Length: 398
Image (cartoon, rainbow, N blue to C red; front, top):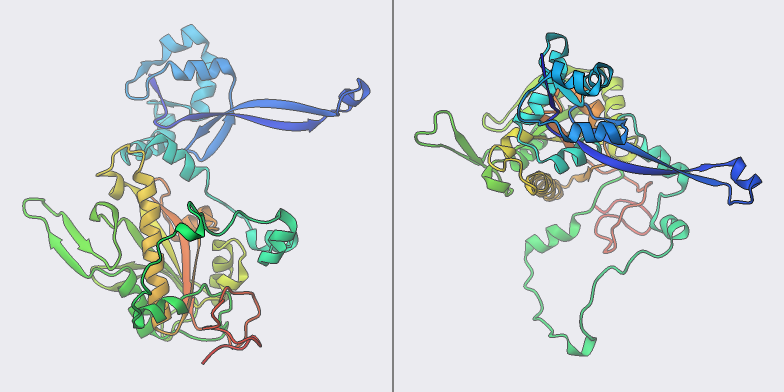
């Protein structure tokens, strides 16, 4: 039997301040600082407290070669080694530990950089209701935020006095500028409006569809695609998973968009109430977003991107840029069609992955977007300083 350290592991010294009655009795400030050393284990999405001795033991065990279990147990004690295996910090080749080994192998084979793996997997939410929490905290408007947090940093950074700046010519404007100016995040969807299949098809094809494909000569089954948005290395690792709530002649449920065939792959039918519940949970109880007739999950296949950028410190950043490019294309496409749109990273990744049956060590949600018709009246604040979407009385512009 053999063991090796898990492929990705980080340690965090975490401080917490506790109330201490004994400190007050001794004339102190009544506070006690506690320091805990945590091991962050991405393949389990778990953090576990370790001692300095355990951390030193783990630091001395290779993650790329196997170490004899018996020799390690004889030197450090069988109970210690067994406990580290049980917590997934050490990977064991025994059959009873096959599940942990398989998870570690999937993360290892995806060629993650350790810092990025920790950032992603410990930034995922499950069961968070940030929409409700913001409402309870009174963080609904910019005025609320300023009242509670003070003034934010200035909106722009300057490096020269006004008199020394070099004025630029007035920009040339086209219809594209008008489209850009109408783009604004929608928080007021018509909860009864139904999207047409043509609108859905146009949106998916413009944003996620393959605008061209090329089979690489001598590359076996290697095919590269072109989308309307750029992607690091031309890899386009981001897929689209759809929560369809109200689309004409399309059953309510979950779908995957296949960009080469320009087709929806049905995954699971849902009653409307269940789809609405999943939409709300997916966007962490931001009810104004959940009301959109269609929500699209931006799910990144990490092995696709990390195949080229192996164990690279910038590779994860490239995947977030990929989602950002796609979301802006989605915004502009929706605006062109007269629809409202949103994108949010405040999502419950774990619940989304479970609903769509995604293996998070291979494919994980980074953001959720949605689109549909705006409501007749603005009930939730939207940032529309030029008054191109909403009138002063809260009614929608024609």
